[in-house]
Length: 145
Image (cartoon, rainbow, N blue to C red; front, side, top):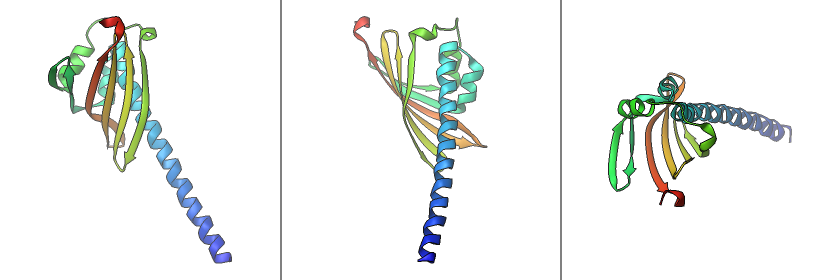
């Protein structure tokens, strides 16, 4: 009976450690995605650069037009202009799944006249989570019809 209790005790320590590691990785991924959200709203190139790997690609449709955009092109355009009013934007992380040094996050971004649904692939590079791929779907709201 003592051996069984010791076994259960050590197994629970292992699972607690694993859960704590998972929690800290989720937090780090959330911070990366937060930089992405803030970078777009504030038009802050340094925040975008902190969130994305320079080799990232952004893939989706603009209306009926299929687009593949290199990160540099997207970030340069996104960072132009005055900061947006944060009160008009509502961005959420819906889910995060982690396997080793890879992660997949689903986000919803509610912007004036349009909803964006992003699927972000992240990789842990030199201890930092970076977005390496973004696939999005956009849906116009009734106010934009």
